[in-house]
Image (cartoon, rainbow, N blue to C red):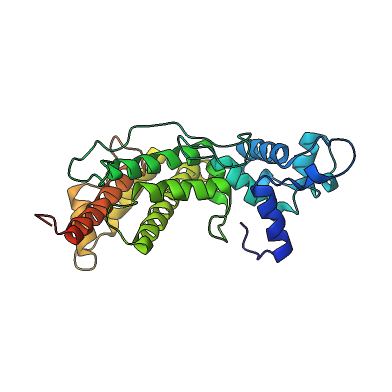
Amino acid sequence: MSASRKTKESQARTLEALWGRDPGRSARGPKRGLSVEKIASTAIGIADEEGLDGISMQQVAGRLGYTAMSLYRYVPGKEQLVDIVYDRAIGPPPGRAAPGVSADGAGGTADEPGEPGRPDSGAPDGRDWRAGVYHWVRSILKVYDRHPWLLDITMSTPPLGPNQLAWLDALLQEVADIGLEDDEMLFLAMFVGGAVRDLARTSRELAQAPDRTGVTVREMGENYARAMRELMDGSRFPALSRLVASGVFEPGDTAYNDIVPSLDFGLQRLLDGVESRVRSARGAPGA
């Protein structure tokens, strides 16, 4: 998932490893002690301790008691290792198991209640699709909280791993058959996934600021509010000036880097719009 492009051969080997077709299993001779799963699980442990920059072929090999060259039989290089680690770390979505992949090293998620049911927003089969989308969002946030270094990985390809595809499929299932066109379903899923990831990354960057600056999150919020009061010019920033005057930038009970209020509001208004479009397409009263 780095910025560089993969060759066809390396991508093919990555897909083999991602989907459990472990190249080491077909080797002749005694059963080998290494596997893609062991390598991925070890790399995840390193990343949890040291961050994404801690992952290297040499570091992983050392933890396993092998030479770095031994790993290349299973993983073409660090770029492909990061691809595999990303997929294993996010794990399967709640209530689902990834096809053909061991659970070792998977991120996993815990079930959490979603948005309260809305009787006017259910799918034809009785599903509360809004609550399903909300639950999906909360679940992926738990994964980012468990493995925050996932947010440091640069995405360079659409989802290809079994767990990544399972998460995408799970979100698509929540909005299936509610009245959207197929391309609209995909647009919605990509927007929701991207918005959640970007907000989670912003929250993490703000949370890390005290380590770099020595300023606490609370102090950061207070300093920002003070700066906004000093900088505001009603003729130049009329909308911002109104918000500053109302006190919305002043620190409150919510942490400065807490994305949940913004995410909840944005997500629910987005789903309001989707629901309105669906009702309109059905010709429902009040659409």
